[in-house]
Amino acid sequence: QEQLVESGGGLVQAGGSLRLSCAASGPTFSAYAMAWFRQAPGKEREFVAVIGWRGGITIYADSVKGRFTISRENAKNTVYLQMNSLKPEDTAVYYCAAKPLGTGRSTGVSDYSYWGQGTQVTVSS
Image (cartoon, rainbow, N blue to C red; front, side, top):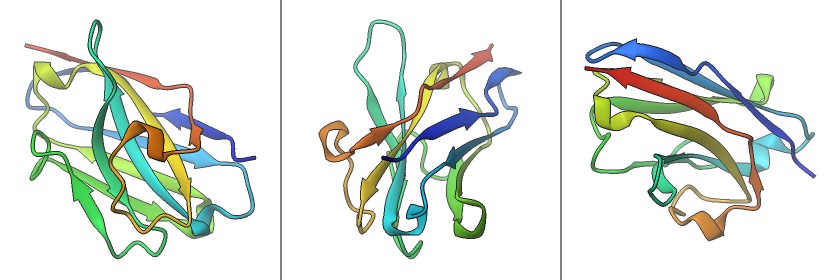
C-alpha cells in the first residue's frame, strides 16, 4: 500500500510560480509512474502531467505544456510539479497519483491505484 502526501500549495498571483511536492511512503516508489491531476470546483478531475517509473517519459496536458514541469527524485521517494506562469484557470486542488510499473503514458484517472489527499492551489488575477 502506497501512501502519498502532497505539499506546496498556496495562494499566488497570476504570473507567479509554485512547486508542489508529493512524498511517497512505500519502498517501491521507483517502480511507480507518478502523475499529477487537478480538480476545480464543479469540474471533473483532470490530468496535468505524468512521469514514468524510469523518469524518461513525461506527458503534459496541453493546457500546462511549456509552463509546468514534472520531475522525480527516487532517492527521496518524491515527485515534484514546478508550476510557472500561473493563471487563474490553474486554480484547483492538485492531487498526486501512483501507478505500479507505469511507463508514463497513462493519463486517465482510473489508471492510477493510489492517490494523495490533495493540496489547494489558488491563483489570483
